[in-house]
Amino acid sequence: MKVVLYNIVSISIFFLIPLLSLAATEQTVEGRIFRKDGERELLYVQKEFFRSMGNTSEISHVYFKENQLEAAFEKVTVSQGKLDFYEVAINDLDSYGSIIREGDSLRLYFRQNEKEKSREIPYETSLLTGPQLPGFIQQNRNRLIRGEVLDFHLPFLERQTIIPFQLIPGRNDAPEGLISVEMKLKNLFLGMFIDPVEFLIDTDSGRVMEIHGPTILPDPYSSRKKTTVDTQIYYNYF
Image (cartoon, rainbow, N blue to C red; front, side):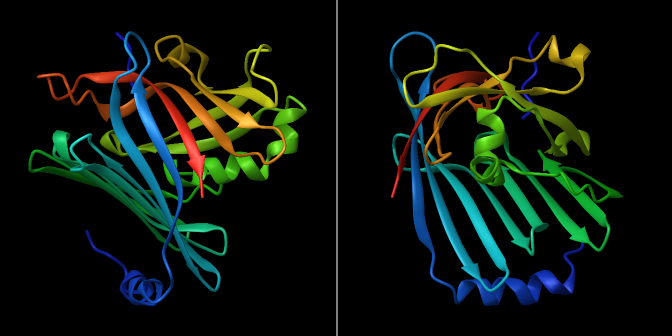
C-alpha cells in the first residue's frame, strides 16, 4: 500500500498578522490539477498569493474544486529566512495542522475529527513547507541543472514530526527547455513504499512548470474521503 506524505500562538504572531494585512497581496501563480491516469479530468485549481513587508513574507496556496468551493489551503509566514508560522487545512478530511516557531523550537499541532495532538521539537534550518518549495527550487536552479542532490525536510503533522527528503536528478527525456527533478524520501526503505514526485523546471527561470505524482489532497470524485490521487499539475505565472 502506498502512503502519501507529503495551542498557544505566540504574541509575535498576533503582532505579525496585522502588519502583513497592510501589505498588498498579489496572485502570482495558478495551477490546474488533473488526474494523472485516464481522462484529463480537472480535479482542483490551485492559486498562489504572495505578500511581503520588510523582512517578512507570506505565501498562501489555496485549492478550489471545480464548483469554485475552497477545498484546502496552506499558508506560511517567513521572517529573515526562517519559518515563523505555517498552517494547512483540508476541508474534506476535516483536518487542520500548524507549526509555530518559538526561538529554536517548533510547536507542531494537528487536529482531525475533533481529535487533537501537539508536540514540541527542535527547529531544523532545512525545514520547508509546500508553499516554500517552488522558491527553494528556483533559488537552487543552477545546482539542480548540474545534477546536485538537495536535502531538506517537510512536515508530517499527522505524525507530529518532520521528514527528510531529497531532490535528485530525474529522467533525461524532459521536454526541451525543461529539466526533470524528483522529490523522494531520503530513507531508502520507506522510499520503496512511496512514489516520488516529479518536477519539470524551466532551465532559464527555475520556475516549476509541471508536477507529476501523488498529492495529499483527496480525490474529490471518490465517495471515500481518504482516497488520494496521483495528479498532473500545470502552472501559469502572472
